[in-house]
Image (cartoon, rainbow, N blue to C red; front, side):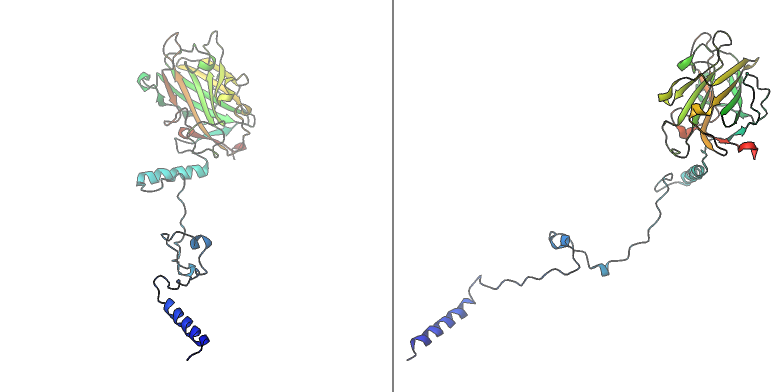
Length: 314
């Protein structure tokens, strides 16, 4: 008979063999570590997230393309829009706005006397005949129109304006002088930095030059913009003379009033306009004619361009 130790050994072996076939007792599936090319984020990502293929199998990236110019529409542009955008881009690179004709201020070695007479002016004459306000009140060039001259030196900007006006009325002063016959100048003094800005900033100026009333009210100058500097400007010299067809006006404007240190070849945003009041004894702006047909008061991109001729004309 087998001894007791042998029986115990046989019994234990049979039990172990039977345990391997019990339900739910299968060995766990071996764990496979993630491949080395996966990042820690990919290792712990949700099973629903696609795992990228190894870097070596990624398709080549397309060659980068240049971003469109900020002045160009991003897509689906028409040929007309392309042309306008191209003009605007070229204008920005040269410091000129694509509105009207470039106005050149000639360097004046012998500046004119500021006395209201235009006899000394022999520079190019420009016109301000575009109706930009009150077209229904304007009856033609005899009602209101203007030609002007402009020049500069290192200290002053000079203007001489001949205004044709069939009825002279100026009863307003100071901040309200635009409600009468007067001349206005707008200047964007730092053109390149805000070339595409459609709103006024601290470098955009608007000056009013009144001939007075040729009686009790003397000629005067007023600065509306920048609004932080608004007020009458006593160091702008303004003189005017009544004529049979309207009036002549001259002004000498210190560059310091405009915050400008002038330099040959510089460009500035610019518009010169003339206002009209035909209501005798009443302050009212009925129409406004400008050197630029696109001119809007609060949008500098609608103004034209003033260039300073090199010193000595060379």
